[in-house]
Length: 428
Image (cartoon, rainbow, N blue to C red; front, top):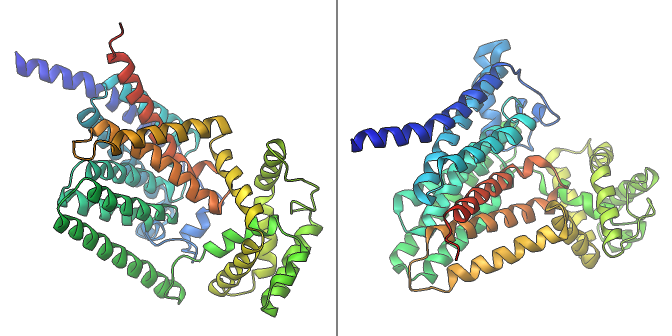
């Protein structure tokens, strides 16, 4: 009788989840591979891309004209496995009901896989998303208790994530927090040193793999050349020709003047577009314009810097960016802060997240000598990851949905956890 009840409960739990997975498979059957503006850079292994996804696409070259179809289906399999994995994980560790998990999966499938067409698009998000799901769950488990096997899996999946999308370098910051957390919870010093050793070795190995790939493919033992070319966009948008006086290097000065004059002629800077950096409404208008002209600024920059070798262009752009940011720290900081707020949609939502994160931080750090609940750690890490992901991306890019898929998923899971709490709460 007991076994029969267990089987019935499992059937009731998994049937809707499997139905969602079958729905997703049916959707992919009706889809064809899709190329977006980034796809070419992955298919042809541009220097601006980390190694895993270009290599992943290259592995299926033997299928000829069906190569991208096979890539799409493998991406689908990865995503399905991650959904099944996280369904079991949420139920096991957070006791979220099958109904709540079903809603989480429906939202994930509807928004990320169907609306944004992640599965059929030839882009790194298709495999980064399932890897992120596993990585984040391991991170929560490692914060909850020290486990050497889980820790090794965490660093492996984290570095796979970083070698897939450079966006996830912020996980190294979370690594540092994990070490600090172990110290705060008075984990034995030997275990802390072991944690540090594993992390340092994994980070070193990842850096070597990444740089060796670029040496083999592009002739430079270097990381992805994207920091300078991304940072310079905001710096130029907020700058004007007067900033030329700050440059000591004549080559960089001349290139800056060529860049800024072209942008001003095209009305692609804040000053040339007659926008004013004023409180609230002015910030909103300036950022809205920046988001709209961002691709045009990149294109204009490339028309001048395009003939320079990729890694040399990266170095020059980074040096110009340093000068511009250093001599306009206040304006760039204010604009960055508004970019960060805009990623959340509104200042009230940003403040809500900040307050929730602050209170959850108090909740997990106060009982230093006691056991911190899995729920508290999960909520705190979810909010922290959303904030850190947004803060990191806002440094380099305007608001693009593909950078926020991971935050969307965490928000869905937090919603499911909140629903569980409300349904099980006792009211007096």
